Length: 302
Image (cartoon, rainbow, N blue to C red; front, side):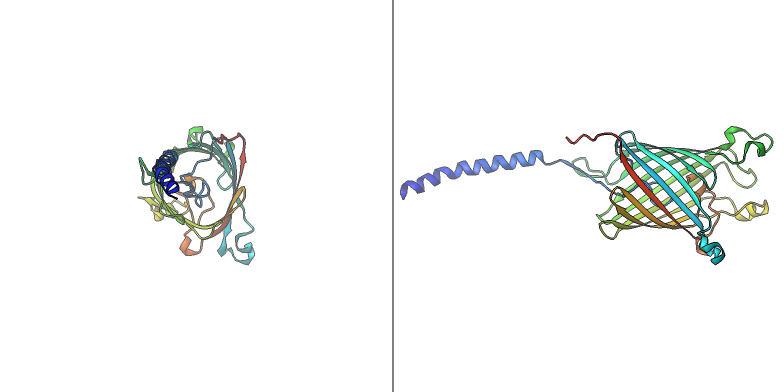
């Protein structure tokens, strides 16, 4: 009996040392920095972009559709008789750098973007409170046809440029918010009605309801916009701030977004500066975004 007691007394320090060594090894393998993921489920919030970029080697097909205004009544089947679409492709060059190209039928515009995620929200060592993504885009308007170009109209007049900083924070597993300061330059405008340069501040967010369903919203406030009375005096359509609401449904390899918005345009050049309907006056368009992701390059699973 005494021999057994002496044996266990002798063994206890060795067990304690082994446990300590095991804890040290576990602490070494635990990551010092924890990066926030899935701030948003897709690259689009409603009409505009989120801070998310595509994973390197991943191709995403985006089909965005907007119907006519709901106040069109039964004659227009509450907008379902009209169709405005954008077809786009996003490709992840790296995990933090994406390139995109698309075609918008509403304004006959070809667009292209580069998105770079410069900073990521993270906790632990070297923590950072939000994610920052920079976006640069160009839009080329195919309209008017070359035969209908006004005198002095040049190819450069079809171009417009967009610069955005997208700042987002995931406050909890359910709530994410985003700010979108935006600068747009149009090469050609009606000088007496608007300027070439436009500045807007967007705000948006996502509220997760279930594992696969979330609510989204976005609003772009135009800073010092053109006066609608001046536009109407020159027989130009009035313009309003862009507002949208969405329901995101994630199903396997794609995300389906059902949206309500006051714009049919799907490029920043137009939906931020040329939205022609007042959401609160009934100019609401039903629409949807559908994305499908394809893995083109084998992922490193190390």
